[in-house]
Image (cartoon, rainbow, N blue to C red; front, side, top):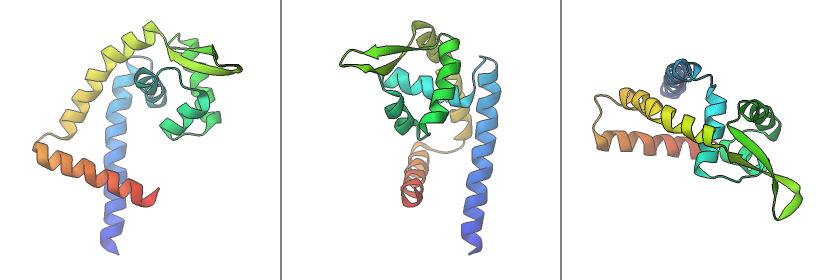
Amino acid sequence: MEREIELGLELARTYLAFRRSVTRLLTKHDLTVEQFSIISQLNKMDGLSQKKLAEQTERDQTTVGKILDKVVKKDLVVRKEDPNDRRAVVLSITPKGRELITQVYPEVMTIQDQAFQGMGEDETNTFIQSLFKIYNNIK
């Protein structure tokens, strides 16, 4: 029983430390972690609907809508009429959004590299695979 509690506490503590580091970085670029997540996803998969974006980022549509309002206002994302369904809207990252991702992503990866410092490639891959298994077991 104690082991399970320790696992949860260590996962939470590690997540919070990682998030704090990323938040400090993103604040310098006038972004939140949530906004970065949204524009990163659109950078990978442009032209998503709000519903699909919510699914991809594992957030509810209302929350995604509020985040989108902010990134649209910052000219990082645009809402466009879906060419296949005039009632629907698709989301696209703007050139300004792509430029920001290109600049910020390597900085985020530096934080990730720092987190894995002292771990070999095999150990890192095993750790990431274990996290995926834990996630899939409890989602």
